[in-house]
Image (cartoon, rainbow, N blue to C red; front, top):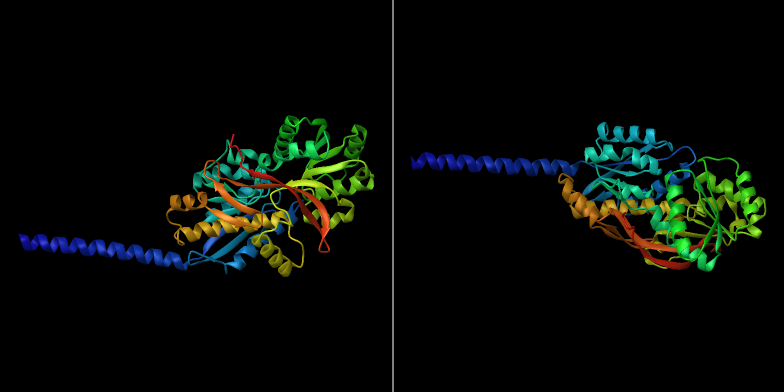
Length: 395
């Protein structure tokens, strides 16, 4: 009887050992497979340049780490968002169901982020948003699987309101694109601006992809503000600035705008006429830290161009992802452990120290007041003031 029991125990032990060996073998095979990251960004339409810059930043960081993390190769699978939420949903489904990606990143439009939110949440696919800034993404529509490494509309624009009231002017014309980010950014700026005694003289929203801002320019001229706070991106920002300058409003009205309006790509198209324009953003070309100097040097060497905050956003999205993959040593099989690694990530970014807020899944970071200037022969933004470490309130 004892002999039979011993044989049973030996057999059971061999079985457990076999299971353990099989598990180790399976993990070893998984380690040989590349980590597939699905990237959905606009590569066509009015935000194509934004998608290009974010991708450049992503690839620049991945080149720095040899396209490896946690002992595994990293592969990017890119899809065009086409500045269309319905297209974004279709591309995300394709990446998840056909390409079997391990993580998702990118997303230009906030409406696209909202559009894919439920699908990503139900599929439990980690999504690291590199751009879309609508507040609700990390507030009422928050998901434990969605993280934002860029900025929220409130976080970027609220601290600029008091600074403009104290340093630029009390009478400001408010202009923004007629979509979630434009409205939330304007509301955040106005909240801080009113608290500091500012007086909005008008508030106007324009459609995405406008080709003529002359009627808007006329309304601004008639309102006679001290400054304009504009929330525009891509081709809209370029067209508005060109016409603002052509009509001569820059000689009597200051620009105190969202960082997207004086983005380095926009300045490339506008030239010295934009000198002196103020903005608020999470990154400044002249930030004096080693990570920023290294980033600028690497970017200019590779692309023979001046980087912008969209490139920084792509760079840092990949930095957060790589940090998390290294923390779990390349084992993405435990989804909760991976999510915990993203939540606890802290990075040294070109924009300064950045960490994920585990209560909102939105980054906590510095926000800066900037001014367009020509530095080292290039048109960019210089630091005016550090507006402090800003955390989105999450409500």
